[in-house]
Image (tube, rainbow over the protein chains, first blue to last red):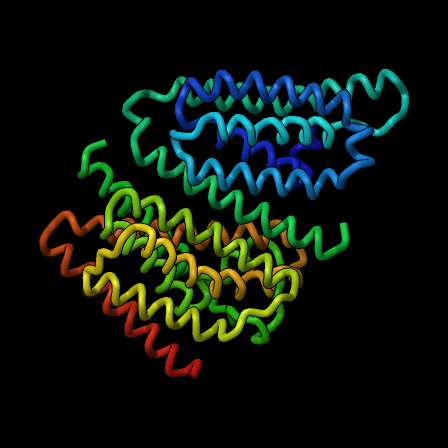
Length: 168
Length: 203
């Protein structure tokens, strides 16, 4: 379960997904959570094949960069575009959370843990945002979400460059 | 949130940033001036360790606040995005000419924009800020591979840059009062003068 917190690429991708879904509340979040869950499951199912096709950590960082940029520029608008960005993030987070092959029980438990962390993080953040009193949902909060998305995108882009530089 | 509460929040943010800046140990901010310990604190210290970086970052926030929405959010969003692109160039070893001159020039131009209350079209202000972000980003990115913990370093310098923007936005919020307009314009003038001093040193 701690895997998400130990892998910067995975953590950035997860935060990018969450930041991208909070604006245009609650319409975008409801649809986005469904898309994210479905694509996360797809990532778990296709993760082994996907890992042979592309470097997952780099793809995660690039997807987080795209998502962060889109969320920063879109704000409350362009929800369909954000939902398009969330799909590859879900697949890649799922693929990156797959445990190594081993004892079936261990794999099952680890897979359950890996799958639950992104979903729980998404739901807890959504719940916290929903519980936020209306007076706190100000233009300043929307501004903060956009700026945080831009920051996240910047960090992900630089880490992607480092991965490319190291040949990974 | 009404104006007074928002102003208080912004001023609190500015005070926090200034306090953090005051507590930061002096560092040689640019490539070739010393070793890099790596990690979050090194990344955080990089933008706040060089006066030319500081004034330019603050000027971005100041100008955004002066121009109002949508520039208020557009400029602090465009800057880190373009800065990251330029940092990628720095990480990959692709050179950008006259980085130090560009950084100093950014302070001069952005400071003048605030001092003279320039209100260009949104696309032009975003373009201007984006062009200057290239120089700042490249300076940061060139040092990133040397950091012992590049992820923490990147996190530190992006957050420090953003906080400096917020400090500028907080100071810029004074423009809602007539005396505040003059204070902000004077701030822009000071930024411009600091930039000129660095420009004289860089050329």
